Length: 217
Image (cartoon, rainbow, N blue to C red; front, side):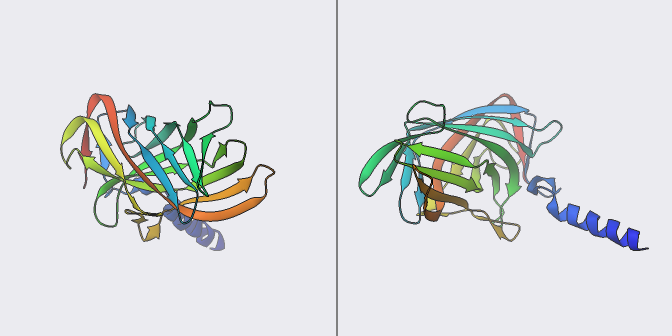
């Protein structure tokens, strides 16, 4: 009997640990397996400083096998700079050219608490090296609203808007939880400086070789 109770408890825990996209009521995209994309200028604003800006974003993504809601994503930001205490520094990730930031992670197609179809991106911990003067570590999650196509429509393009008011994402809540991007600054010697939440502003267009259908129920 005790063994059954333990197994039941584990099953309940596993159910609550399922990724967002596992719910049958979530928005989902069918008909495509992979996509590429671009975006214009974007910014990452913290509760104080620094602010990180980039001129362009390049995106690649792949849905998990058999899934219409989850997958992996890679984002490359070019001409990236950090603005801190009135000074501008170029930023990059290790091994890349000045001004180039790369991050990877997972994505889930979701329905937000305001009933909007959206994409929840969970990047891996990403360290920005800014002109060898300091580093910025970024982690957490960010939600972007799917602005087209409309629910029930098909297209080779899917547009996503990440919008924030200051350091707070406009679409931040999902299943009763808030999903923030988190950051902290470090000196070149590794001493931790400020810690902050951050809001991402960017508009991206994702393209697929085959049309995908956005379903919202």
